[in-house]
Length: 68
Image (tube, rainbow, N blue to C red; front, top):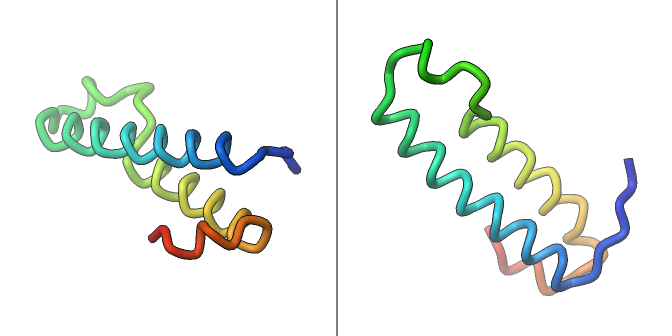
């Protein structure tokens, strides 16, 4: 799927995903019970989405080459 975003929108999405990743990672560390995790996006899924968006946009937005 191709989504057209400008620099600011892309950075906002990446920032939101990174913030969500940190929150979910902490939640998973604090809640080891599988029942409490049902329906919650895993940190790995968020990380993979973040990395996919970052990889796809680095060619289009050279300034993103500085983000890791």
